[in-house]
Amino acid sequence: MPVFINRAAFNDIASWQKALGVDLNAQKAIVDPNGRVLAYAQTGGMIAPQRYELTPGTKIFRFGVIERGALGVAAGPWWVERAELDQLIRFAETWDLTLGAAVRYLCLVPPEWSDITLLVRVRVERPLLAWRGLANSVVTPAAGGGPPVRLPHQNDVAARRVYQLFVPGLDAPGITQTAIAIENDYPLDRGDSRRGFLYL
Figure 1 (cartoon, rainbow, N blue to C red):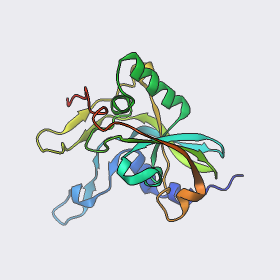
Figure 2 (figure 1 turned 60 degrees about the horizontal axis):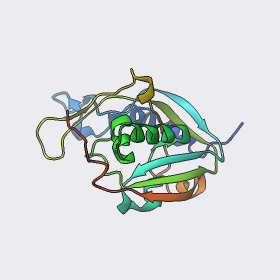
Figure 3 (figure 1 turned 180 degrees about the horizontal axis):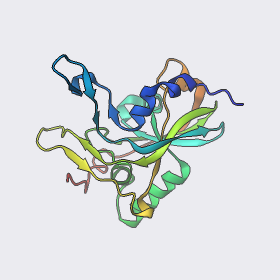
């Protein structure tokens, strides 16, 4: 039986909640008159996360903010595998979009969450546990105020279903460099990922 380096983080109930898109910030929660949390806001995440194992040698890909650098981006939890990256590339080519814009539409990443200026490719070095599922609709506050940003999922169209991975624990001290090896990073244009993006 493999030893998963992030088992403790995966087994924490918070990892499943975060994969579901639950915002665990108590300041944004619905509370009773005594301040007890009644419900947390849900902003996106994935539908029905399933346990998933990543084996050594697997290549996974993550989009992030170039200012964080490759290692900083690689410490984040949201990833896609090669088949899903290829699907995003095909979608971008078919609809004459940039890769960043395709990520926004199919992985449901509004500009409020990321400017999508860096793509990182890593190789899994140690067995990892992840949550895997299809993107859920996003509702999140707009950066400039006004109505919330709404991105409906498109899972009813087979060609637009993109399975995502939520890998908890990569941000723990020393885990990123032990669990994965960064193979390459690719800068993406900041403006291109927003070009054609519509707030609904």
